Length: 596
Image (tube, rainbow, N blue to C red):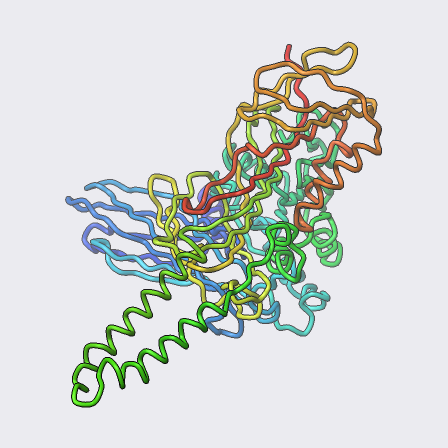
């Protein structure tokens, strides 16, 4: 009896940590059903919501369904903000149950911070029926997005929600939940599920309950900037014993890329101090709130990349001349020359012909002035980690583009990435701004063989648009130490050349090299710390405020025995193919590897 009670309690706990979007029995005789379950109790802004789809097909024929998700951000129940949609196709053969974990992208917050909400709607159609469901969350884009394990959520949620009401960023703006909750035993192994959260809080038992894939996914999101807080129930738990960093034995805190992992004590009753917990998630990380950065750092004249790209002026004169000429042609010349008295019936031909000619001339003028496709620039901060079996590159990509006439807008996002549109300063070219709350932009995704086919308003004709992209890509590229005596010598295995290379050794010495080719050893020359500081200052200034802080975390000025290099030939997350990227500047950082 006791094991049964324990099993039932576990099932109850798991169920409460998730939210059922819909469950429909499509064949009552066999109890066949389709079910969609959100793995988190609420979604984050500008990230992804993981959803588990189950088709339990106990019939004698195959069943299929298309599940479509629509995510709307707004405020006070309005339709302001941007909207994302994604669809997945799924089938189950006769007598089989199919389970699939998918991701639902969520939009950048573009409404006022007060009263912000994010709703996810799920609709299914096919032979399994037409169920639907919703998941709603009241969110404040200026407060960190927090993910809390079920073990901590149950005894602390009410007290944390109450403490949140008096926090400066949400005070007097209604009621918000402190966190989303999750069950560690059923977590996805895709880092994009966690990257939308600023902080992830759990116990060491929760950490151990995660699958290896889920742990690696959380740690990948952690490298990109998420903060992980682990509460210690076992005195033996430390950074090394939990498998986070084998070199940090006995340590309760470690810096990992742009994020951090911290282990804190907790009493057996799992009660948290609400004030201290709010302080941890708001001040424990040097990074600003992720959703707030997406909302405000790319406008107000604060985006270095857009300023460097320059402004585009609108040539009114040519259009005014065409309109005046059209008025003269369609008016007096048409009336007194083409269709003069006694031939007025010709106006039925001449007027449409003049209008068509003027329209074609306007189109030709637009094509001559703006051209087809567009131009853009990209700045990328990339941390490469060939150590501890990671063999991955973590990219923070900012890109700005200006388009002419586009003949299509779809593209395939080949890399594992989170793509966020960002609001620009109001202008005749910007379509997504804070002033228009996103302008009702629609961003569409379609899943195809683990890739996302994107369409909609990511890129629009005769427009300016900006995107912030985070990505994790596999790589074997690294900087290997060739010599340990004399001036440091290295070899690059990156498949692109490096223009400049800076290295800070274990004793704080600063070194530099130029024009580095793949597979060839090179020797550095000593430079002063002042020379390094000037170079770092110039590279740091290329990015927005959040990525400037990330730059500081990854800089060799703060991490000895590491390097920073620049290149204009590095990898980038590819988006719309008709954009000619006139500049792709990459800052590459990472540790130096000593091969045995």
